[in-house]
Image (tube, rainbow, N blue to C red):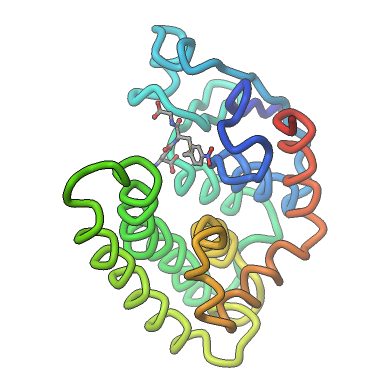
Length: 212
Ligand code: GTB
């Protein structure tokens, strides 16, 4: 069955792979699944045709036959549950890998999003100077905990899984700020993810559309 995802017609990052379609592309590449992309403009995202796919008018979405999904965690989990390569066979290890997916979007990504918002969109506010160090430290607290758990391992729990795919995707957005490099083991962890052939294909595909 044909898989169709949505992505920005032109991503504001100019092809750095920071928009969330990249993590879905990465999962599809890991699973060896071909897919098509429907590109949407910021205006089209808020129109009824796209809102029928995504209640919040965002990208990415995922269509496969009658199934329409939104939320990258749900999309990557769906792909991982139906195709080999992204979740372990052992039931307990599988549950732990899924826990890491939730940790990525529910525990690690929120402080990173607060930090990005403060840094990129609120820098001109009168309170920005006082708030930015606070939100940056909340990110550092999470990264300290995560790097303690990762230790010297390559991946969070045994072999590479959808949990690592989601965690690396969340972390790589921090690179430009310099905070990721304060945690060399996490910077190396993200680099290991980005070195995977499937990530490289996903990155190249979005870059081909967005590079300017
Ligand atoms: N929780 C949802 C998920 O995981 O799927 C979040 C989806 C989401 O935030 N989508 C963003 C979107 O559609 C694109 S990825 N925004 C438009 C809107 O809300 O109107 C966020 C993003 C956008 C741009 C960059 N960039 O250019 O650097 C990075 C990340």
